[in-house]
Length: 121
Image (cartoon, rainbow, N blue to C red):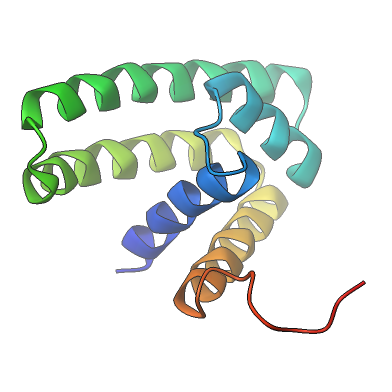
């Protein structure tokens, strides 16, 4: 269940940080590099994971012919596998920070997307 929540958080981050547009695999990896202080080697490995995931995601999207349930069912294992690969690259401290980041994003998403009516700048 936690993995599913983390994966939903990844998708939310991708959309939120991309201004409503999907972030490229390179941008997603650079975002993690900044947030988790990844090494260049870690960032390169994660970029490859995200590129592979994006290609497979596009194939799933095409094959589903607009059937959102079928697409969601097919993407969940892909997202879980990608998430595990990313976690395997991270140090224990980075893994902890990554999990917290995903949990925070999941909570923000559950609270209406995090843009709402709070205090401003």
